[in-house]
Length: 579
Image (cartoon, rainbow, N blue to C red; front, side):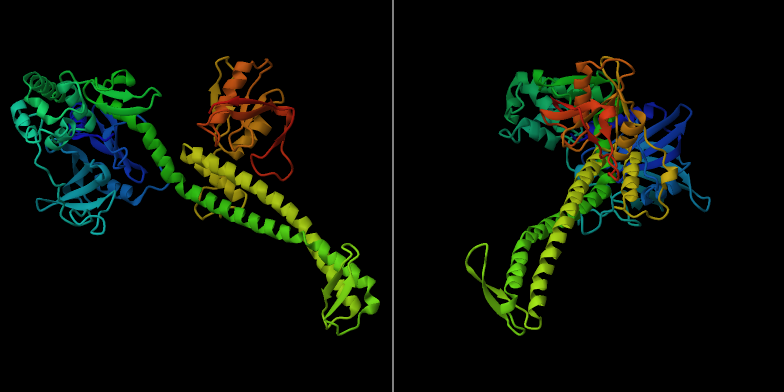
């Protein structure tokens, strides 16, 4: 669901009504590659404005959520701070119902001159962008943008530093705030056989698919109705009534900021009028402002996208190490398979020793009776060696393979444990929700020698250990969940007591979960609840009938030299739950 121009006009009205005009830029952050937060402070307080050019979550709104910011601000963020910090907001403009919102600021440049800078937020689907402009000789020129668009990306419209800014091309569409029902009917009846919903999108600017479906449904009680239905007087009257309803909503009368959820509670659509098209298949929730609607609709998705961007390099590094280890394991298994031939060399050594009296130096082979098979066997000899040396050569080969088999067996077991460990680290990194969690995982991998400790990176001493996820069961028992392997170790081996309950998904990477008994008997209902938490904080999340082992903490031990998070346990039971 994308933000349309009509809804954007309501956001603009809200920002203006909040008294943002005249406020000054206080803080600028770039929590993700294509996302900004600009804090404006004025007489009515401070407001944090979220701006996103992410195609799946493009928006502008007031936000109450504070996103984690990277330790080092990106270059575009630093550029904005240079040009906009302390600037006074002069105006917020939108041309028609285009999906472009422009913030004009009065700023002071590096030599003390007053200049006019503009932050243009273009919410154009895949072409969404946030562009910093400055006025020179009455023209707006690009300073830079959150996404640079060169000739290799678009031959129609470039966005590069220093060039003259060109607004997105505007199509010949009607502005629903100022057109009449008759004007709309004339255009729509030019395509009588086409679906009314689709043609409305092409006819009006700034309207979303969900709004047009609702318009078509209200007009003909059928979202698949053709444009030709407007020839019917009653349907045309309904069409005109809905048009007036939209006009009133955009002017602030009867506006309802509605989010539509499916039966699983997942947000599906949003608009600024109540909807009837879904019937009982969906659930509606009304918000008291357009910003709160957008903040609620996109916040979870934006957070997931931010973490996906930030964890991408770490996950790639872990996957590279995992694949390298898996490849090494396969090679070792092949070598171990070859070691199975060692008995052949021992038998040949025995046969040569038993027939050494028949051998002479300079022979290149000898045929002897194999006492195992009872058949004659020809054995190759090295002409440079004496008979006894030839026999010893085969014994040495046998000893070499025998030693290799013992070593490879240990190495293979070690590599298997290493793969299990790396799988658990990958799972923890994939489930991470904050930069602090990712940083702790990086420190863990550095401590284990998988990653190099780069210069100017946060050291182990300066990173404050994270707290586990703390929950409470319906029966009132505290349940703590480890976020990563280091925290799993601290939680299980140091924080938890012997009579507390320990849970973990059976043979599946996941978090350690502790139920604190505090001298009480833990009921089965809390055990099942804790098992569900363990399942949802594991690699098996979303699956059904997930086995979860549980036992008292005093039965959980850590073997000497084991990797972080790796433990052994006994006296356990298993429960099946859904994740």
